[in-house]
Image 1 (cartoon, protein in one colour):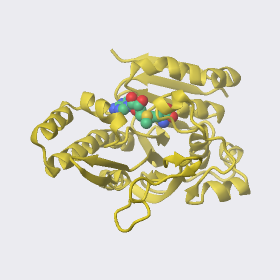
Image 2 (cartoon, helix red, strand yellow; image 1 turned 60 degrees about the vertical axis):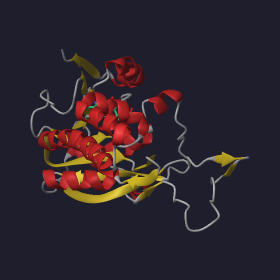
Image 3 (cartoon, rainbow, N blue to C red; image 1 turned 30 degrees about the horizontal axis):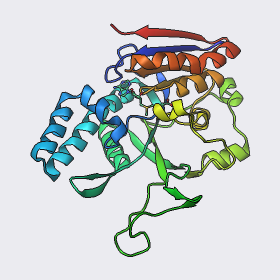
Image 4 (spheres, rainbow, N blue to C red; image 1 turned 180 degrees about the vertical axis):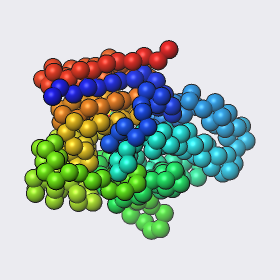
Length: 297
Ligand SMILES: C[S@@+](CC[C@H](N)C(=O)[O-])C[C@H]1O[C@@H](n2cnc3c(N)ncnc32)[C@H](O)[C@@H]1O
């Protein structure tokens, strides 16, 4: 049966278009707190954050830095609460996030976004499940083809460990889902033993999978199709509803179409609509999927 998809240009802090308990799976990646490329977006979304940065520049302290980090996570927490509301009992939320390292006022430190999101989701009521570490292609600086360490990289004790992995945090709402024996769509959604062994192991390094991001994917901080593909096939059944509250370039909707799931995606930036429609165009045609675009006024 052809699937249905809705793209909503609007803020997912309130997903009024989604009925409570109607979604089986969330697959998403938010803007990462304390990663410079997302500073502007957080400031636009929350004027308090813009004021705190100004205060930091004028005469801020470590306390101001902590307030900025807290405010960014408070902002995302509104979406995590909505995510919990729209999920069905037994539904899964898969959240891809990276930690951040940053030097502010001469002080270098780690902002462990994955622990903060886990704590917030537990407070909301989610059950925390074992997470996945996605080993990204190296982002270490290279010199003559070899990984280069800057400064005193060979001298103890002041060098830093690099962030090679991102997290795919996994949460469940309530108890495990139950199915009728021999549920047709569930059996049609089966994965192979090789897929099971690889997908359900804790470290994903995509050996042999093309992972070079295009310029557009880098600009939108898109995850590779393979991330969405694995998560959708691991945690949902054909014909079910997958939601992405931070849609970006539209990867989740595209892969939902390809894998015969219904989907919804929220994106605040109207400029991304063209990117999204281009990204899903081929899948939409091949699968004769129905796609509705809603622009909130
Ligand atoms: C990391 S990107 C998502 C990339 C996406 N996974 C992909 O593959 O293209 C996060 C996106 O969330 C959007 N965004 C941030 N806050 C939002 C909100 N409250 N509601 C809807 N979209 C939001 C940003 O504009 C950005 O495009």
